[in-house]
Amino acid sequence: MKMDNKRFKLMLGLNQVGSANYFATSTKSSTVKRCVNTQTTTQDFTQFDYLIQSPQIIKKIKVNGESTLHTYEDDLYCYETIKNNEEPTPITFQTKSSPIPIQKEFYNINPLYLQEYHEKEYNFKTRAIILNRIQDNCLNLNNHYSHKAIYLYDLFLSRLSTKTINNQTQLRFLSLAMIFVATKMNAETPNITSLLSQSSLNMTKQQLIQYERFILKVLDWHTNPLTLQDIIFEVIYSFYNVFPNQKTQSDQNYKTINQIINVIVLDHNYLRYSLEDLSFSILYLLHKKDLQENLFDDFLKIHNKTKLEILSSIKFTSKYIRVINQLNEKQLDINSLEILKLVCD
Image 1 (cartoon, rainbow, N blue to C red):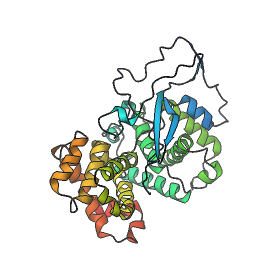
Image 2: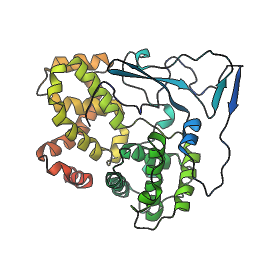
Image 3: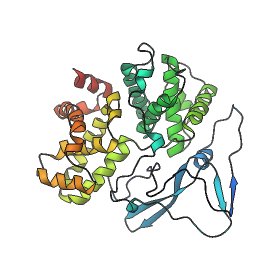
């Protein structure tokens, strides 16, 4: 993925700085709310439904020269038709000391959620296989939202109060539905026929829609989390602003970084670390030979971090980078699950 000043348009899950209650209802008295109508169970939600139901969506995009600044406005579950011309103050990256966005609390995943399942029903090996299948399916469909689907997959199962989805068929149906939901939220309504063709279980359109509705109910329409992929490229963007001379190596690093994060998310232990710490750790391990130690420490200080704070995540990510660095460019194209097996050997 090539990095430029336009960055990412998918940073939707930000906290508003200084807001005591991010999901507080609007205090404007001059508003008229219009909610989405209930649909029949045979019809899937449209992308328009996703936009008006999502707790927060991109409202404006301001283009200034070569840079694109995304601003955000609170929006709960309905459109607000403002009677007057007053507009709420948007949220921007510049309102925080660090340009790295903050994940909404709702999107936090319990790293121990796998323990709530019986070992034979759903375990870390099953999870890795299913999530690797999500990556393969997205690759086959030329779909760029595998990391969104993977994050939602973990989030959904961690928030499912009764662990009713646990057998292989249900889990594989769920994985396809997550791709469906993540794609619809971020891009456009995916081709259902093409998506269903990825399953060898003959999943029907009706089943896909049922899973979609179940997902949206459990997640309360929170369908656009920040992922490790989102955060690491924000960190990289900040890093190259501070150290522009390192950008000459960026193109060759992007493929390596993508493979690193593709493998790491298959390991359930990554949920124990913050996405920021993992991102800084990966960047440190890739550039430590090219930068003096104190320079990277100064970079961490910009983001209110220290080397000591990320030592555990450095140790965790180092084993992945060590294995991937031993692979040549051609071998980086092998299945992420196969690389995970090499790491675990």
